[in-house]
Length: 254
Image (cartoon, rainbow, N blue to C red; front, side, top):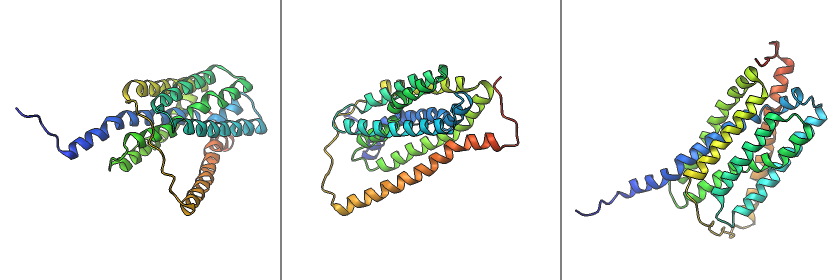
């Protein structure tokens, strides 16, 4: 009997699905892992570390700047080497170690050091995941839809992760919260290590864009930074605001 020839559309769908399922799993776990810890970090600093407004602001500022710098450096490094899957594994592992330390330590300076190193590296996991998706789905006409689906999964993770974090804090406090976050990061690292195929080197970038295109990218980047700054302020301030101004009594673990 002759070999069975798959229809082009079925072959294309199979090639799309091969990396998409594990990528969606990593996206879901990464989103939940950060959604558990990130929004309540300011509340943790105030209630567990007894940090004042200046100390809280400094912690959050230095942590976010470190995440931006480290993610940028890792992105430049990964653009010239076939290491995207390894970086996803490293991001999950450093996130697990970092939040594991958050679960047991109550030293401001120790946790600040963890934030500018381990969790800063972990913050590169999301951009590297989308970079991996773009590379693995290169020249696939369904790639934009697939990447949009990954973003939707990440957003769903935030919707589920935040109320789960509030429940964990109310039930057992921040120790369990950070421990669960660390376990979820371990799950993401294991999926990336065992389920994602290794990719080759990234194709050279097209540098033919003119000044007008670069200008539009710069304007879009500034707008994105401003939007994200407003969102981050709201996310980080909301737990403190609700706790300080709500008429309901604060929840206590146990």
